[in-house]
Amino acid sequence: MKRHLTFFSTASRYELVVHASNRFAMFLVAAYVPIWSAVVHLVIPSAPVHFRLRATGRILTPAGNELTQITGAINAVTLITGFMMFAATFASGRFDRRLALAGYPRTHLVLAKTSALAVASVVIAAYATAIAYLFWTPQQPLLLAAALFCAAMTYGALGVVFGALLHREVEGMFALVMTSVLDIALQNPIVSAGANSQAIAYLPSYGAVQAATAAGFTGTPLLSCLTLQLAWFTGAALLGLLAFHRRTRNTLCGTPGAAAFVGSRAVPEATAELGRTPAACPPPSMPIDDPLVEEET
Image (cartoon, rainbow, N blue to C red; front, top):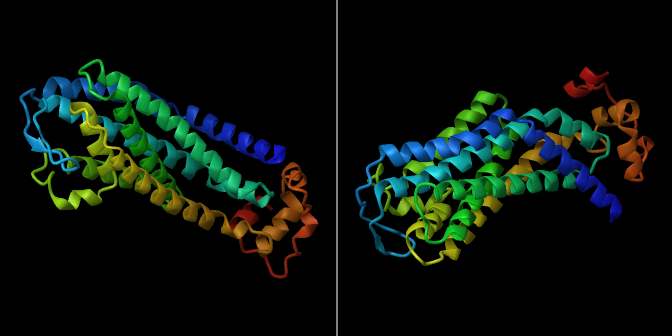
């Protein structure tokens, strides 16, 4: 048990350091959320907006700038967490392969990424909720924070998927931005005439938007919507797990390139902790064709 805790804590510290060293992401967290909230508060009219909250069927009439601050906050936290996880996953691809090749358990690497995402999501959601109090007063602040947290977790998992599957940074950033913008904009009744359409129930952040709107303007806690949002996170996390497995699949013991690399450049400390030795892998029976191995050798 102590060995597993050591693996998990070491990988988690590394993930948190990677996120903390992302200065652009830290700038977005500190500046983007309050600036966006201030712009919405000043630019969007405060005239009441009549719309039906699909999750409850109630007709609500909140101020337009307050309603837009909810969708804006969700858009902000999803973009920030998605960008953070995409950047970390995209940049650490080769390092993850080397760790797995040296014997570091992939399960602990995945759990470390998930825990780092959870910590980042908690901080960003709490910060966005606190910023909201500068401009208006949500009726259920804890539920609002929970909705922001669930949305952030979902897009953080999507960031891992994009970071593991896409080959260029611009592709991942474009995919994240377009997914979040279209997802949130279609659910804002001020900018979308189809906000009450049946189709929006299938959007990734539907549960978070419904729960956050109810938290802002009603006293009804929509826990079922949070459950739906967590289901979206679970699906995205499973996709991220498959993508991570795909990225590190050729580091499994028994592949020719992996065997040669373990025999020459593996990290001794990692394999020793696992109770294995490089000799446990069979010797290569064919020429090495792994680009990573060729680069290292």
